[in-house]
Image 1 (cartoon, one colour):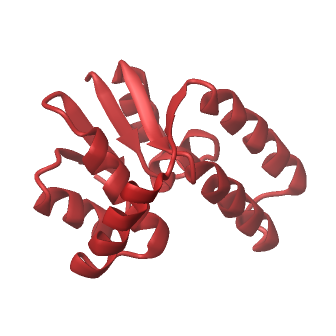
Image 2: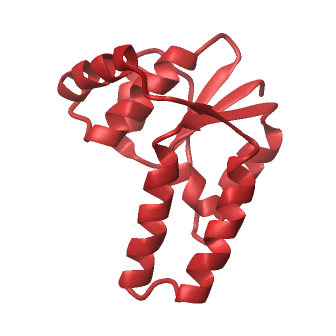
Length: 142
């Protein structure tokens, strides 16, 4: 696979043991390059903090996961959310019933899509939107 886009639901299992971890790692390893929106940095940090608050991660595990994520972050292509992309995301949020950051993921992948491109997520609404837009997808949930 040439370029693979990971949304946050595909990034978190790379650093926290989840049922989708093995699948996400396989896709990551098969990719020539991996991209995501720069906003995923905030989303992953937020997801790990929430998991700690909910008692699913200890503080030590959260710190280890953050270190692992930030190491992987350096290997990602970060696509910044410029004004035109955000306008497209706003339209996509209404057209495809997407939450805010999911709409940004949708628009970012749409902008990066090419013939040898696949977008990876575990979010059903985002996967459905990408499919409708003609983007090849991988569902981390199988």
